[in-house]
Length: 429
Figure 1 (cartoon, rainbow, N blue to C red):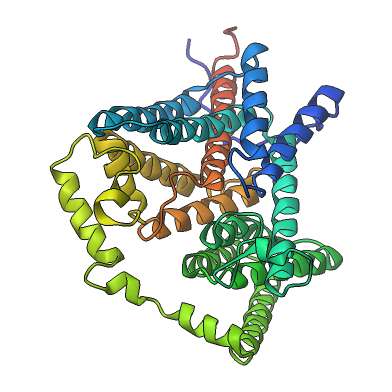
Figure 2 (figure 1 turned 135 degrees about the vertical axis):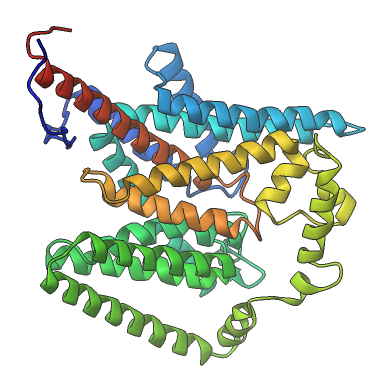
């Protein structure tokens, strides 16, 4: 006899009592601190790497690191990508320690993504909150140091700048600026949601991050921030259908645009700062469009990639063309071969498809997922003109997104079990 016909079960994340056990509090703190360290990479290996080595080893030795079907997909794609680097090493006539370390670092960064995805999927509510807090604290400190360094407000400020641009605790302004964007996306939403005092508090910190991004004078970071923050505003508008809220949202957005406009006007009117800003504001620089510039290297490099299925070896592109590829996809083809390029493209596409499907789901982590998704999408777009394969926060974004995808898959599996139980109440599992 068949069970009753029931409407489809709509999975919703039930309200849970937060795990406040001493063990979970410690785990959440450790994860938040690990992500916090990602903002301080003046030297390599950075504390970030050393701390993550300890964390991953501890999880493996205690048997706490488990993989779901979702995180196994991430593992497979990243393993193929890293393996491509090792295979591509065979194309180098004279191997050296630097090349081997480069590929090992790639493997390590991939491991951080897999580790984060695994631990987040188990208890997303508490662990994502700790990770977000750690990231925001790091981004705020890093931005403050970048601002202080640019305006020479502290002793030794030259350590925090490069080529007249703020780089803070990073080796390059072009990494420092994009690092702040995820924090800016998170705070953009917080300036529109919640109590007035909290919104004002978030707006103040958002202003700090945006100023830090501005002083990086990174065109990629500027475009990334504009895209990510604008996308968060649009998603918030779509998500909330209350007319009063939407009017307030439009007002806040207009005020924000007005304040940024005033800031840009002040920057353009301030001598050396204005000159540098005007120069960097040009979409295409001479070193991009010159006959031997970045775009010409891209064309030559992709032509070479068509005849080099195993790549030409890590760190070899600069030896052939005089400068790095400055393109994530060309870098993947040259340093990781066709296996690396294909796995990277598949990873990006699958990550975006999963994220797009979950952007508006009713989950406690949806605001963070939206911020990570739009920031990740922006990163893979600027990857057309810049290398990302060793950016720590790029792999952090992957780990966060796939951890949330895995948590959602666990919820759906649980809801399917509930549906089956409701449809067949006489059966026991």
